[in-house]
Image: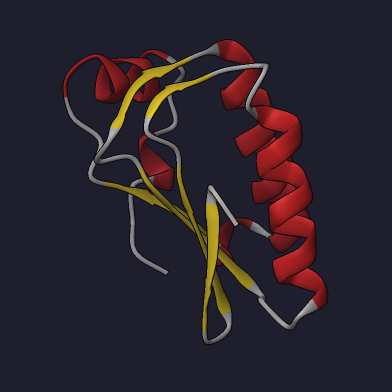
Length: 97
């Protein structure tokens, strides 16, 4: 898998560079595979993500609803990506699960 790895009961999403609409279908397919293999939580590591587009925000919101907010979190957001998270009032997602 390119963007999602399974760590026990957690799927960890890491998208380097631009997390945008062309990447979203790949991330979704890989996440669904992890969920089928027993993952119940989703953690998004934004350390290497340089751009977070509206398509990615919509996708992450869908993932958050899918696993419920207490099982969803973002971390390592900095710079422009952190600004995008804050501009969308999604600071509540900035947590470890």
